[in-house]
Figure 1 (cartoon, one colour):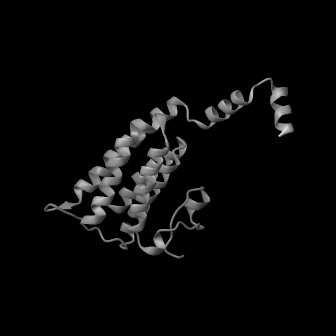
Figure 2 (tube, rainbow, N blue to C red):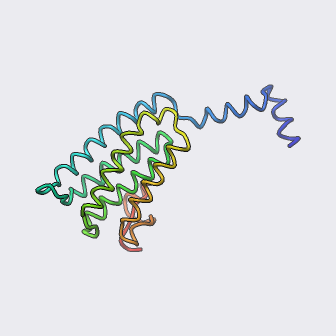
Figure 3 (cartoon, rainbow, N blue to C red):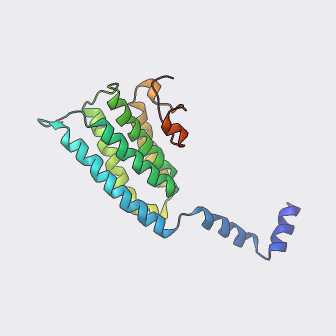
Length: 178
């Protein structure tokens, strides 16, 4: 503690000023949040359109899994860039839904469709809150993420590292091998 006090004195800053400096360094810049909101809105619209296109006679059908996973992956990337980890985790859950759809390991029924639609609605509703993100927002998103993940096949619910091209580029993906 003495070293910390000496370092603060040596820097000429109070401990409060140092704390404020580190907190502001962790808060994404306003322009980055604006970019995220624009990007998220675009991909949420696309994800919603995929759900709507899959409706068969008023009952949910299976959406295009490749397109769904791709849009969710882009949403995840934007959330990660904006340092909105809970939203990135939810987007990863949605990406997994798309991947499992492609692998024909996920049954699109009314509860699954409703859970995905509710997750998309929550993200859309929370976009303005990203400017002043708080614990209540984090909790709401984490709860929605848990709801999505519990609907996935058991071995798809946990991420695994692979040797494929995505992993080599630093993208975290799911495989059917583990």
